[in-house]
Length: 83
Picture (cartoon, rainbow, N blue to C red):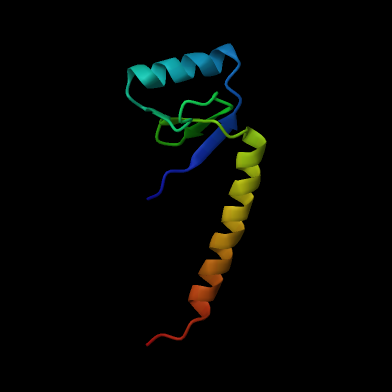
């Protein structure tokens, strides 16, 4: 089973700041900003919170690209003859 993104939000609101703080306390926060400013917070279905320096809009665009690539790869895999 793979983890899924439930939401991608900006980090400025008080509820999101509390969510990030709680995630850090429970060791469920994953910081992938590499020292840059946090521009988005990804909330995963398993309760993990990912801090990213990429904007929510860019993440949404990349997610669409990834979904399209995965669909294309799955279609190619299904059409290959088995050995």
